[in-house]
Length: 150
Image (cartoon, rainbow, N blue to C red; front, side):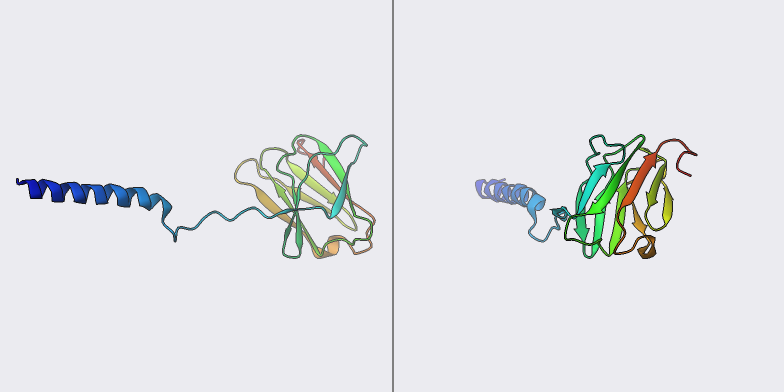
């Protein structure tokens, strides 16, 4: 092979390495969507007067999502709108399967959600008629015992 052939092979090899390195950062590659910014629409107080569990709040259009993925075991909180605010049109609760068995939501109506034992996080939607605009508070209770939330 001549010197020119070796030079061409080196150039082709360098281009292949460069293209492989650029493949990691293709400009049309889709990035993961950023998480929604946190919101502060509800006052969250522990049901028993203790320090409440950390429950982040996020807006998803006109739905307020309460992220319960960090809570586990037995517990509960009381939700109230901030002074001067009303309840969001829709409420959702994101839970991590395996952390507790039931999520009990009590407002105008009582709704008990069964949490799967394993899998990816699940979002439960509270029906619009479960609470009204003038509902004073909504109580959430989560439990690990199979019959305690009924």
